[in-house]
Length: 330
Image 1 (cartoon, one colour):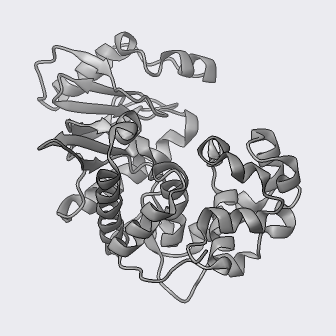
Image 2 (image 1 turned 90 degrees about the vertical axis):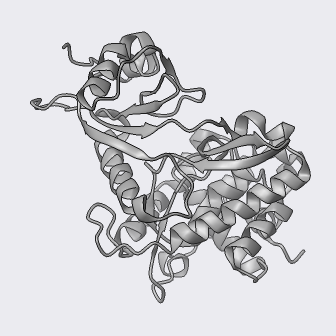
Image 3 (image 1 turned 90 degrees about the horizontal axis):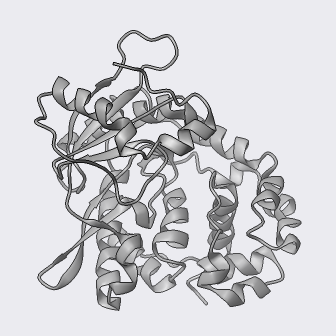
């Protein structure tokens, strides 16, 4: 069998979601694990970072290459799924197989994961069809799921160690050239970008070492929440893709969740927090910390902020933006 040839970024972007190119590799994986016969292989509805394919609406096969830190992402997602295998309150696809496409290769062995197919649509595809009550119910369900995830015991993990070290390293790394990164993304106006260096607090104020760190999904966006229409209502079916999972502060989970999943809707945020078990409202001090985590997020979480809330573009300071996005006391 030929080796996947996606050594350059251009090759990868051109072919990573090409089902015809990946068909022989997907078939080889299914044959290896007795998951055949294979009839139809198609790209998943919402392409992500890695090659992911739907096999006959039975299996999802996900490959990891050399780009976008694929080898570590595979190790993280494998460990998290194995860790969660005995946790029953976390709706997710069942991991059925894992391995390497190439057993003897010095460059990249192309590790893979195989999951059971879960019928559902990404929340991003259907969000505009949901009623207000359905959005509230999903926010509350996500709150319960997050609380369960953040409570998972991690004494047996190897890749994701239950210490603050990796989280602190990530925060420190993201703080370097943070303003330059946002200038390149150009989602925030220059007057706010110019305030970033003075706005970000020392890492000691961002990380609370007095508590134990938690297992976090790390990227709770609309692409990673699957919903189904059941009894004429949209309901959450599963949370997928734990490749960005980290160990850290549960507050970090709120970044993608609030700005992407909830589209900055504070009512949904409060429903989530209530279901999570947090009865405290978010004041100005906490709002500034949460905005700091947004600024330090490795992806451009502000990419459509001003489409969601056009008047937010008129704020004059990051402190004002923090209150507008996060402060639930005003």
